Length: 318
Image 1 (cartoon, rainbow, N blue to C red):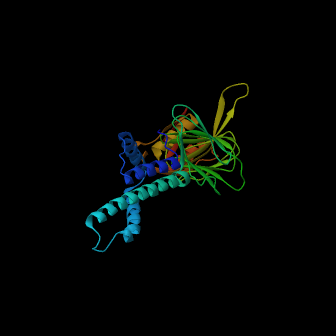
Image 2 (image 1 turned 90 degrees about the horizontal axis):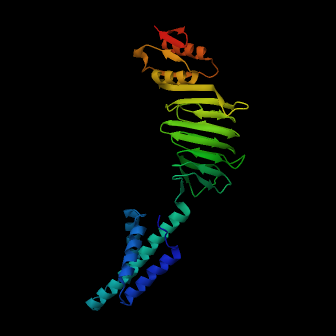
């Protein structure tokens, strides 16, 4: 990324070129090249409407300086008009520059990108964000406000500064995580989303499903399926690097049976057989607190089917 000149330096540069035009001194090719590059860099951040409005505003303010009597020589009018337009051009340029400077300094959000390695971002409230490779964090200039809000693309670990009155919200792709002060990780891989909580408490919300409240060593995930939410307990095994996971809650809201069965099979390490013509039927159910057998019985009840178990396979049939 090219380094821009400080605001005051650009302003001085423009005035220098303008003064040379007024004095009719020639401008070097190098200066012309620099001015052209600067103009392109400046105008690319401004839309056409902004440039047009700035130009019209300056020119309308200068109209009364134009001579309106016939006793002034035509060549004098043209010369005066030429210089006047040069002045107007510089004023427009500086107004545009001021707009860019104001937008960049006070309005444009700060964007942090981790390319090929982790990047640590220290926020103004004392929170620390570790962006994993490929992640992007967007922070508005108003941060921190009454509610501390940031936007995340990709994966990141958050260590949020504690505040009992200023919630910290991470808006991710299709879900958000709200905390008051804690350490957690957000993972986003395609449609699959997850939040791993290490310390404190968090509330994870996603459209169409109940809000999930996590405690330490718990994980929220949607299994890559819309309108699906689950909370999983993940605890380390003593004297081992392994971890044991247990499904604490599982909810579906208008989810096709085929996808519901996929989640149940992977969560309970079992097989479920069902009529082919029922795979598109939409399921809305909360399987929180039930055993694998109880949950599959509930699913069969919703479908109006009977359940038969053979070894590690549950058979749903008419």
